[in-house]
Image 1 (cartoon, protein in one colour):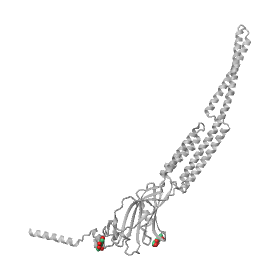
Image 2: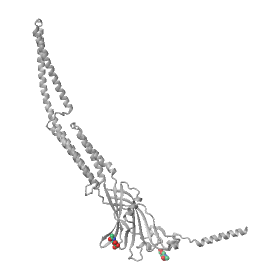
Image 3: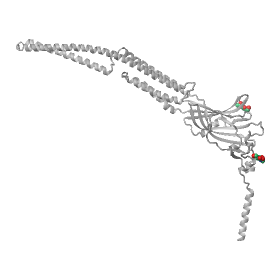
Length: 459
Ligand SMILES: *[C@@H]1O[C@H](CO)[C@@H](O)[C@H](O)[C@H]1NC(C)=O
Ligand SMILES: *[C@@H]1O[C@H](CO)[C@@H](O)[C@H](O)[C@H]1NC(C)=O
């Protein structure tokens, strides 16, 4: 029993001593201690980290587009969300990973080391997204810094083809003060790789379809000094569906309504009211356009041309309707005069008839009187029969005249109700002709214009 205990204790001792001897414990702090890298060691912060000042610091930059947050035409602002990686060389840092249990890189707070003073030339607003607090430091002196940032940048946009446009926005990155011989700025990956990588990680595109990210290097010269810059160009195409549904189609609908209104009957001002309503609807749509497009565009946007021309055409058709209505009005006025004269003639005729009637009556009366007076001479049949015959004949013509008068009255009312189709005066004919010619002109102009503008939009 005692021997067993001794044995176990011995074995344990062997295990412990063995472990302690073979395992060297390493921590990141050991590396920092080796480097003498502390928060209050200003050696790492003050100057460009080269041992010989003629060595340029090579900064490699990689930018990937995460999302297109907004493209605002009105203020010419482009807001992408990018992921920027900077890699540069710090000649003061190096260690042998073999001495530190194979530690090849450590992360340190950002403000412990010198950082390149890169900035974005187009940026108009300070980035307020939270900063990544650490950077990686490798054993060979490479420092890697990664940042996600929302860049609010200006971008000169060409809205000529809005909403079928493609925009190109630049982000230029360079050192704020270091010259090209002190600090080089180099792209980490080429254009096609950056494009492909951006496509893979792209989160939201919204209205815009990301097409390409291209990278160019450029030396900016001023006062015989050179600064090296990298220019990232983002190319994206607008998805026009919303604007087509919201804007282009409604205007076309109103235009077709205006075309259809040519088939509304001209009289009584209905057509005029209808056209004015359609024109008002279009002007409301024009207000929307004013919200979207910037006013400082030197090349007129096609959509403005589209609106103005259609608006002008509809205005022209409204004016034409006013003219035609005026002519019709004039026509109907002259017709009314004619009719009044006709009425007067009718009345004359009526008076004549009435006169005739009274005469007739008198005659009949007379004949009656005659009859009565000649009552006793009933044996004399012939004159009485003649008288009756006479009265029947005159009665027939009287009825016929009455029927004629009735018919004339009926025709008049019918004419009134049918809108005097048949009775057109001189100006009425003109109105019809103008209407026809203008309709043909209108349809031709509209179809020509629409085909022209859509081909322009397409190219
Ligand atoms: C480490 O840096 C401190 C100053 O921060 C300095 O006083 C000290 O001498 C340095 N040690 C070595 C070994 O370089
Ligand atoms: C910019 O200047 C640097 C340093 O003078 C030079 O190495 C580089 O080739 C130049 N780049 C361009 C695009 O001219």
